[in-house]
Length: 360
Image 1 (tube, rainbow, N blue to C red):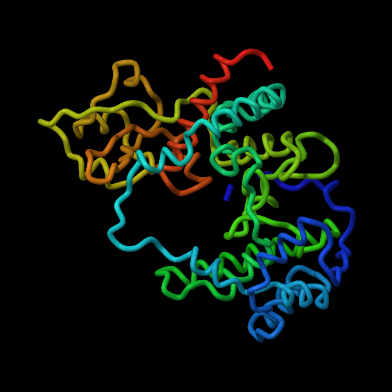
Image 2 (image 1 turned 90 degrees about the vertical axis):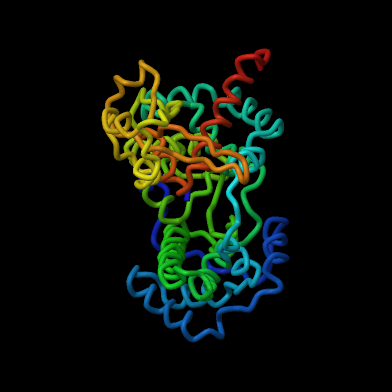
């Protein structure tokens, strides 16, 4: 997660590329090192049966799909990484924030913004999404391409499709989701005549600088540099355009703030009611303030619903903000208010650092 319809020019045909018999080059060698402890799915009857069904659904060469899925490997480390956090683990916004807003990301963000200023301005004009939000996303996801993942995408998706940890409370649902992502990944690779064993990504199968899942790539990735193909690993233009298109598709509203500061009137405060909808904007300004939320006078003119967002700080007092519909849009990239705030604050810090930096 983490996108528009892929342009037809991306695909040269429907025939799939042959799978090479041996590793080639440094990226492949790194991928093979990640996979060497895995168990090939060629001996998994369920996976092979699924491969035949997926090939029929998508009109793909059954032999090619079986070979691709059969050479995917079950990686126990991926299953472990998908285990839910231990019960009772305290959330801590300050700790979470420190992982993403630091000098390394801010410096890299300033460089990314300086090098791609015209593209960011164009994306803002065409999609209405501020440059700082796009910069925040790419920085939080991969430090502007520095950390795009070292797992073979096919291994990650296959492991989570066929061996999702059963201890997870939503194991069945998540397994079905990753089977859909694996099917979409194979379709993309076939249409592009590409080797499905080559792409690297996260342990969840997300790819490129913006860490798009295959279905997100298919729906929202755009050829923003106009070269006839979509490259989310090396083309900053495609990355910027795709992230902006993703947010616009989810309803980003130009000019609307992501959130407002909020305080409380203890005499009227109904905190339980305010927190009940979680991060989904539900309250009008009038109903929000009637339940004891206090907003600055300028915010009282805000059009649209608000949500009370709680950011816990471990044993310390939590922080609260009033989230708008644009804040909610950011959580469509990752269902987390902590994630959304990290994106917002990293983008803001980069913007401030860029303003203070000498021209590139």
